Length: 161
Image (cartoon, rainbow, N blue to C red; front, side, top):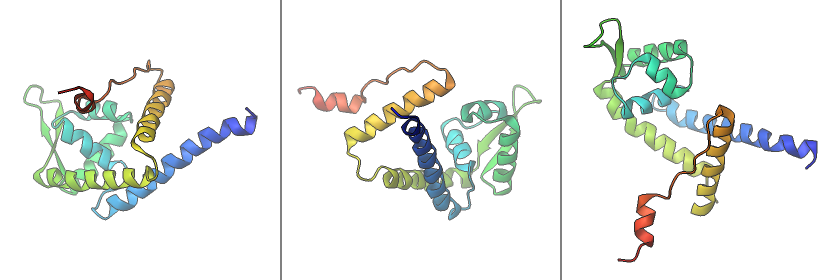
């Protein structure tokens, strides 16, 4: 492989990532969300009431980034910070009712963006792409790549009744 061809894979990966984020941002802005806020909201929809430190670890960002994003989401009425019942020095971040309702719009924007990005790829190609990207992610985080098992729903479809 030539030196030029080697760099092309990384260039395409970066371009695809940037374009995906831009397409998603355009959909999210219509609902009043800015870059990164959607990720905070999705994590909180899965683990409501976590601390800013745990949230920053889940997102792979620095704590000041989470603090700033949470403050903006608080101002929008999407989240609230409440003192921990077990440790008054800690604050836990919770989705508000308004924030919980906004999750549906965020998930819809994510689905539409994914559909746009994967247009023209069949299910097998989509799975292969997801697997390859998981391997790239593992390589860049020095985490051992573990191939995920087939979906349980797919296993049920292939098993005789």
